[in-house]
Length: 78
Image (cartoon, rainbow, N blue to C red; front, top):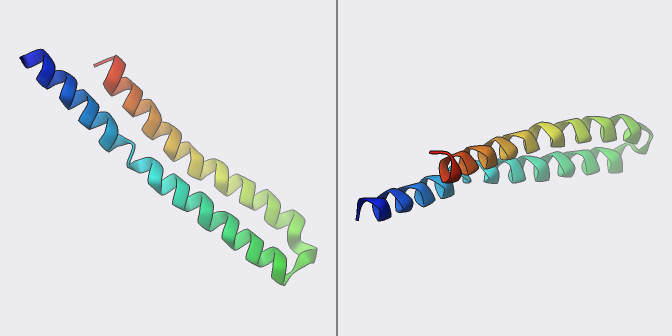
């Protein structure tokens, strides 16, 4: 009985920790939107904007990866 309760708590906790990945997805979408808007307005600056966009995507994706690591820790380690 308590084993089932612990397993359910692990699954709920892992699911809740993945809510943070939603922020990474929104951040990546906004980053690409801003870069494409800037490239459309000023095509000469597209090289610089592309570099900064990829850097912003990497930082946004890092948050989602941290959430995934926490979810795996909750499921398999604790």
